[in-house]
Length: 267
Image 1: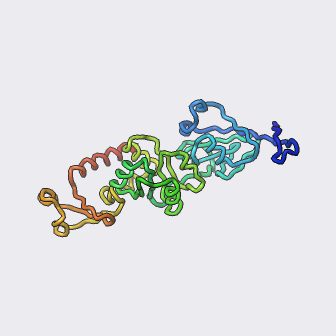
Image 2: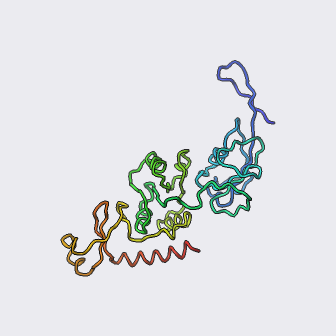
Image 3: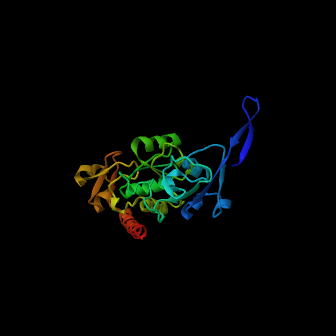
């Protein structure tokens, strides 16, 4: 075993500290999180003390929320497993075909509730998800601390472009959104959490996430613009902010989007 001599804090002499070395390997779908010079390389990490596989994995830039299966020397384990010298660690993402018998899955197959909280960089995505009927909490001034608190206290899946936010120990459910295009972002989330059957278009307010309820034309007649009153017959009001919605041209555009989402996410 290798050793490292270091100076004691009280300067009374030298102490011998045993080093351990582990050998992690990341599935190809997780390689994107590694530094470019480490992708596809044989990896090793030397440590001065034992630690958990979670710490090893995240030291390479891979958030624990992206990991579904871990094996140490061929045996499935969870994030709390402590590593020993010469351990070989294999790390697999969600839905990877790992061929591991009796694998201990670390991520939920399906969400208990399809509820989300999105970070400040995902406003357009959050709006589209709400229009599709998905429950998404979003503010353009959410702090990291508030996002983690919502994730923890409300059980909402944290959607973010910040991998380091997902490494917070308190984050249980989370997903790192890869694309910079808001429509592709929506597709990512729908695929990841198998949400096609959860879509209920035009049931939530795109502005505040409140639920929409049908109202008669007579109930809101005084609030309508003349052309809106003339050409449209079906209306809904947001229970949260009070906005009124009707089936304008955006309705048909969104139906086309839903069709595309269904075809893409089902493939």
